[in-house]
Amino acid sequence: MKALLLRDIRLAVRAGGGFGLGLAFFLIVVVLVPFGVGPDSELLAVIAPGILWLGALLSCLLSLDRIFALDWEDGSLDLLATAPLPMEGLVSLKAMAHWLTTGVPLVLASPLFALLLSLPVEGYLPLVISLALGTPALSVIGTFGAALTVGLKRGGLLLSLLVLPLYVPTLIFGAEVARRGAEGLDTGVPLAMLAGITFGAMALLPFASAAVLRVNLR
Amino acid sequence: MELNVTGLSVARGGIPVLEGLDFTLRAGEALILRGPNGVGKTTVLRTVAGLQPPLAGTIGQERDAMAYAGHADGIKTTLTVRENLEFWAAIFGTGGIDAALDAFDLTGLADRAAGGLSAGQKRRLGLARMVVTGRPVWVLDEPTVSLDTGAVALFAAAVRAHLAGGGMALMATHIDLGLTEARVLDVAPFRAKAPAHDDFDGSFL
Image 1 (cartoon, rainbow over the protein chains, first blue to last red):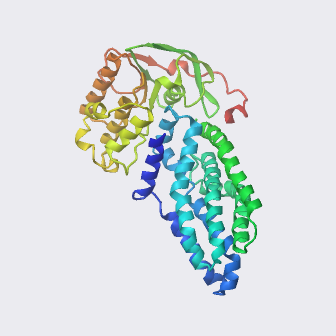
Image 2 (cartoon, each protein chain N blue to C red; image 1 turned 180 degrees about the vertical axis):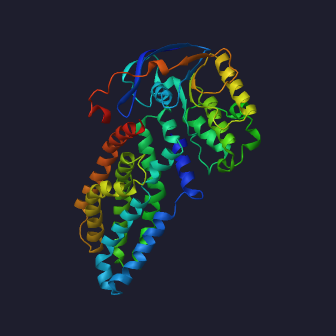
Image 3 (tube, chains in turn orange, brown; image 1 turned 90 degrees about the vertical axis):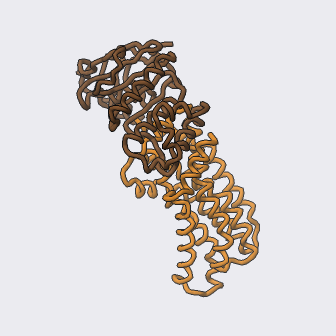
């Protein structure tokens, strides 16, 4: 199982793997927002948690269709399906590899990007915690969407349409944690909800992803 | 150990293509499926490999006994030949890859990026994966596509070595491999005659 994780990370980091894509997109969103809404730092500080969460979510969305599409195109997905690895384990590992190559860089870069949007200092820790807790859910839900659309040519649009509604609860509670943190309020309740969504998705969705993947491989 | 397929009917996209297929493979035997294009050879092989459920009939062997090689080789172009094989060896929990590299004359290419290989070399890498799996039943779909005569001989030797070790091979191919001991099964007479039964929901489940 470790071999699959290592392979996916290695493929993502090597040329053409799209490792920096999400991060670059996140940076572009964060840099362009002040141009769009004006340089008023008080206004920016108010909208920063929401913009940062939205940026992270969209960057995550950008790389979802690569989760299974590449393995499908070169035939490795068929071969992995006949390997001694349970399909549920396969999709969980794929989600984990996606999180490690997309979610973790976003989490680590978020304090820097928060600086660009003049987020209040006390909001940094809640922002990082909310992203660290919420981005795994984005990867797991996204893996489910990718499994649904595997084998479709240009399935990216359908994937976005399927996945975005499922992302809404994560976005609401994630951004709420960051907003409350920035305003110095108690973040306990939205943080608990966010954690619940993430762990619920991690526990249940791999079974759904594995089931649709089996159907799509026929 | 034997592979006992009885009354196998297979479907593609919910439509039956072949039905009533019976064959038995004992340890050390090879069976070659023949038939015109589109008759359903690939579907039979995918069903036997466990990638799709049979419409009817039984495949008297665990999925875990099968190693499947389809039309695509499952090669990652940015990894080297060695990394590709080592990955599959780790997934299947088998050890060294040197025997597989040797069998398909890939030792000299081991540290080359797989993306730089020719079509025939890629095919050899795809077939070397079968050796690495360490599984008793090889299910091969058109294994000799883009191989030259020398590579076909290498492949035939690898299959023979696998059979000698008590393995089995089930393959669809049109060319003569020189595997004189292999039996040939023409699947054309097994074409499904019954009209597609109306199981709209079932084809999605």
